[in-house]
Image (cartoon, rainbow, N blue to C red; front, top):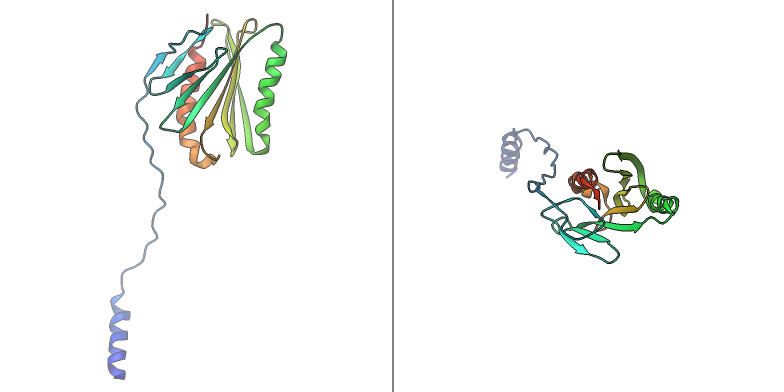
Length: 182
């Protein structure tokens, strides 16, 4: 009996010659549809290009929500006419950005200036688990003021939403670059 046990142990031990290799790291592979843009069809004191795959919710006071149903995200656009209150509007917009400093790892501002179209503003990229990853404001400095915020309908987890943020950031930049006041 002892010899049989020794024989089985020896065969088992000697038969395991294959080296064990660690599994490679897995990377998330997300694919997004090819982008195609159209002009905003709603009558507003402004116009810009939006992604055709989005839905636009018409809100009061020339506000609107650009919805990304497949990404569970939206860009909320607020419009305010300027009535000798540009400083207040800018201060309010920046306060809303810096409310995220509690959860944000970093807030990266970038200015946007297009004197030909009279579009001036800033875009803020907010890294970390903040409620909004991108915020922006745009103005002609005399009559019109727009504020925009990107939100996801999920608990903030920056690493998880980062690919979608990058995808939507292109659309926000397109919105800013094509903005025209009426």
